[in-house]
Length: 142
Image 1 (cartoon, rainbow, N blue to C red):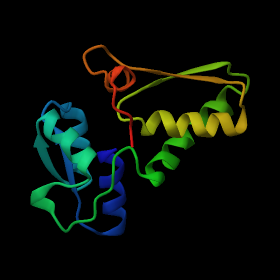
Image 2: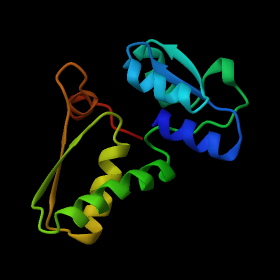
Image 3: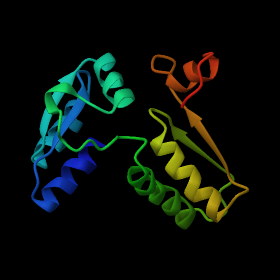
Image 4: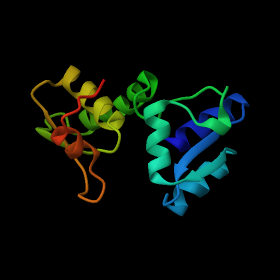
């Protein structure tokens, strides 16, 4: 999402800072830099704190665009679902990688709007499993 945000900021001539985990792939970091954004690398725990509190102290007062629960980001991700249906109109199932949920929500919403019988499955690696942790937790998302 940081790449998309950086690209859009460049298109509009505005500055952009992207908060990314310190283990982000170098290819993604290069793409973000290529679009002119400032990269702020922090631990995964700090990234998670930012996405749950919707703020990052050093950037207080800036406009915060949530990487996966912003309706515009989810809608943008929905275009992937539309492209899947365009390429494979009779698709029965789609498997989507799950991170924060915005990609899955966007793709699933678009597919289910156009073809409600298609199943959409969210998958995640065992080493980074926020969805499984959420389902097993006593807490409920707010």
